[in-house]
Length: 604
Ligand SMILES: Nc1ncnc2c1ncn2[C@@H]1O[C@H](COP(=O)(O)OP(=O)(O)OP(=O)(O)O)[C@@H](O)[C@H]1O
Ligand SMILES: [Mg+2]
Image 1 (cartoon, rainbow, N blue to C red):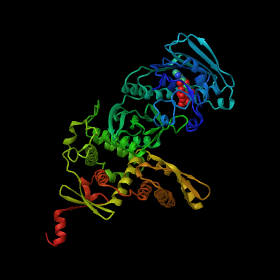
Image 2: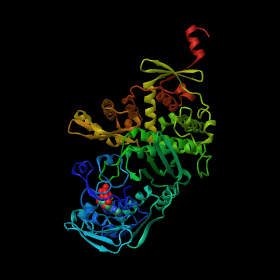
Image 3: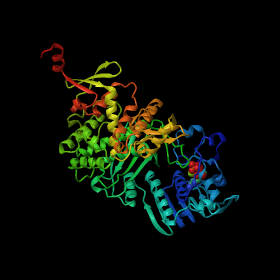
Image 4: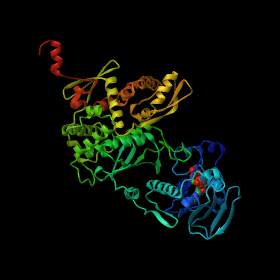
């Protein structure tokens, strides 16, 4: 972290490459910028004081590196930063700030006072500046560190001031922002008071302690931790187990490189994966930390830096889903669940999941797929989870991937290192694959199997609320008749639940901006196919449309995997549970040796 780097104004061409937009909307956004600056300066503690919900006074004090006295007038200049030098740095930003915008934006809408002192300076310096005012710098007393005071936010911009909410609401937003920043930086002690009352007080500590403290501050019990890694993406999960969940709304944070980010696909994936953990009437409470390999995250996509872009979003989603699937599997068999007093509850969990499915009106299909109704069904579900997790951690594990920490994994039937492998026995044209396992021949109709799996994934996600969506880099514009435009418009809410974001684009076209992540890969052809199928579905009577199962199968049939390799097919076969119940999996035909001989010779 370049805590001692000097401040300089970015060259115009580099400044132009930075996601620009409104930086300060309300006290909480100012607070976020100032606290992040303190953290970038290597602070060990940050103290925030508010008056009037932060609109009258927002004061942030840190014990970080301080600012070079000669740099002080520069920090309020637009595009002046110590954190970025070249375009290359933009590819792997390690600091929370990088645009050189925050203090300049604040100085334009409030009276700003910055006091700062470095360890090597005898005295501090104070800078005062305000809207339309030239900065004034003079010496002052100051401990090592920086203090920024923002007074009368938007006093000169009545139109903006009018949009501020009540003091209580703005204070609550500041508390939430403080907690969000705190989640990414457990090593920094953080305190917030409002009109003298302490509202947040978090000591420095380890991540688990910090997450627990934040959950507690939000009225939730402490979570259980779990961590794992898939193809270089580390995932740490903190989730409140079902027996400790309180009724009411859930709480979900996704943290990437120290930032709490808003990412619909990631949130959706987490929510649906955790659905089995969530009893009726409650929402999931979890914090998920995702750490992809260096260079794989672009933070320069959103003016408020609350979004990130992954070089390979599918890989990140896959890692998160896999780790959560392992976690679910582990808990379902009552193993390795830290501090779980009721490990004997797999059946309850399966039923809970089913209730969630029923609540969402997708139960009939879902029940069919998982057989989770009876205790026997619960066993099947459990075994499937074990198989999936066994596969993920079994003999096919790649060299270099960390071995399972679970000693018991290998002992389970169908999973672990003792399980037989799917032996690739060749292809019949592009559509049919042959695999051998346990002296049985599996003839796999690839498009049928894949459509079945995609449909099942969509239904499982729907059971958790809605399907995670994935934004398209460029919207796909699809021509449509006026009637089709109206029909699609009428089912926008349902389409959103399915993970589609489709806008009307003029009178005779639709713009597709996001698609369900679980159904990919998406190309333009698949998007067009899906729109055509969904337009037909939208024409159904409302009652026939109520169950999104039909729409899910339309979506599943729209995408096409292209050429798939043996590794993918093996994963599909395992996901479908083909080993245990191959005859019942759509697209899979199972033959024993005697079936084949009987057919050929006409007699056994
Ligand atoms: N609390 C602080 N301690 C030390 N230096 C600071 C502090 N706050 C700001 N600075 C200095 O002022 C510069 C400008 O801060 P500002 O927040 O405007 O931009 P930034 O953090 O570089 O980028 P961004 O606009 O993305 O936040 C920083 O680059 C840093 O050098
Ligand atoms: Mg900053």
